[in-house]
Image 1: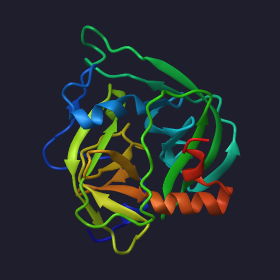
Image 2: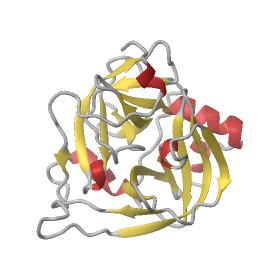
Image 3: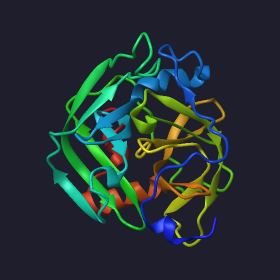
Image 4: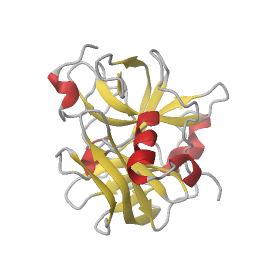
Amino acid sequence: PQQTEETTTLTQSKIIGNNDMVKVNKDGTNVEANLRPYLNAFGIIDLGGGVCSGTHIGNGYVLTAGHCLMNNQYGEKLNQDCSNIRVLWGYRGSPATGSPKPAVSQVSYCQKIVYAELSKDRDFAILKMDSAPSASVKLSNTGARISNGTRLTIFGYPQGRPLEWSNYCGSQQIPQLPTMFAHNCDTEPGNSGSTILAINESGVPSVVGIHDSGTEAFNIGTHLIDATNQLKTKAKFNLFTATTSL
């Protein structure tokens, strides 16, 4: 994709072509078996006036989009209170208006915004929660940006509905905006902050990016490596160390 004004301003997440999203069953049986152990790691973030999606990446840290916390204004937040934010886990199954209605399995409350940024180059945030599910998704440790054609997938809460799965999609670089990349996984508003996952040869997912926004032609994510490098610079915080066993 060529850079347009849309790649540097917030737009809504998009369905690209046909809608391939799958409503995840409560027991996860309609998701590939290798992905089911991670379903409880995806939470819906209640912002007290809107929702985003987030992922538990270990030790109570949740990765999401910066614009969820920045009121869509460029800037950053560092070590700020977030007691008005909670994350609901395990919310999946029938649509909220169906029967039986899905139930939340756990609620976590935000202790601190470790760092949040919304800029033309990055859109991500790290929250520290008072509790978290046992499930977590590891960060990719390649130390590189993902390449064109990487097979990706996304879990999140489009429009605040119970958990949905995007199925698989591909990636493409945005030459004029190297810290971000394009993908064609289906998303909707509410998917903001969903982690973008790559699957290794053993079928294990890892976080390679954070879904931020979209254009009419493609969706946009921040490269994980650019988010973690910025976190080290701005907050003196090593996300890889903090999310491994201490």
